[in-house]
Length: 102
Image 1 (cartoon, rainbow, N blue to C red):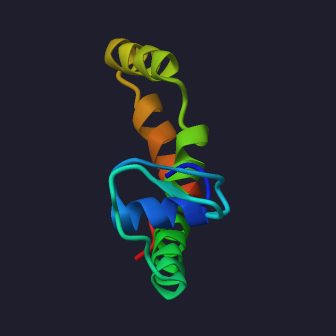
Image 2 (image 1 turned 180 degrees about the vertical axis):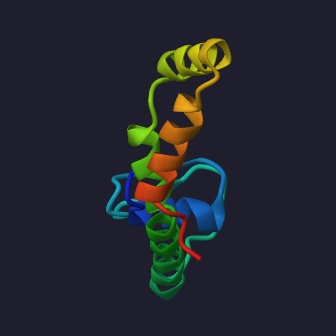
């Protein structure tokens, strides 16, 4: 998930199917006959989604830091020609700058 989860996301994760309404979870319409979850269930699911979102921040940081695929292909091409490790070094730097949490 790229955007911080909202109450709507928690409700959808809990009930699935077709739902509509604002992202704050108010005035939800359940199109497939789902039973609306309780506020406690929604808050528990929202907390789980936020924890997952926080734990994957490094992925979002890496995504904007990696060279474009075109740049990476060019690095790999020149590494093959020149016997260098430019591509490996660039990828290693991004991973070191944005480490995966243990």
